[in-house]
Image (cartoon, helix red, strand yellow):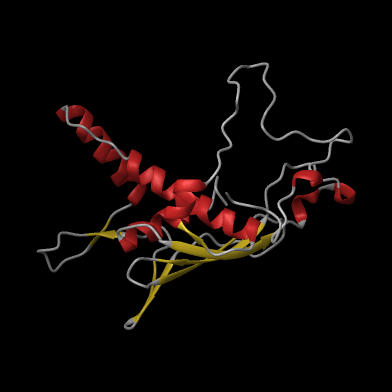
Length: 196
């Protein structure tokens, strides 16, 4: 959810010109349990469904899954009163005063804007966008893990961190397997897991 699906959530935050104020979700772990349910792959869920609510009441529904041999599109769709817009990497950037719309590859545009800022010696900082996109996905993950409706501001204020206590090459990561190499003992359980 956080390492991959955050990119699709970023597109929707961009379309909404802001981040959600609350979310709820459901998810679980099926495929990533490994052989015989040994949980070889850490403590992440491999499928989630979230409902995000923005300040204006608009709702975004988000699905993500990392399971082999399943339907796996990576798309964004905006549903409105006039129809459905499939963004799917074909975001159209245009001059608002022009009646013509030019299709521009968003990945090329992103790099050209960065290079332009460097060449012109102007500041260019996408840090806030990256932080809010990441936090949108963290909010969704925490709702799935806990089974609770969580408000953005509440998670930002009270949420815990996963940053290692010790930053060193010989330090243990914050999530460790048990003696059998399993991570099942760490798997978040809805209704029991506390996001803060």
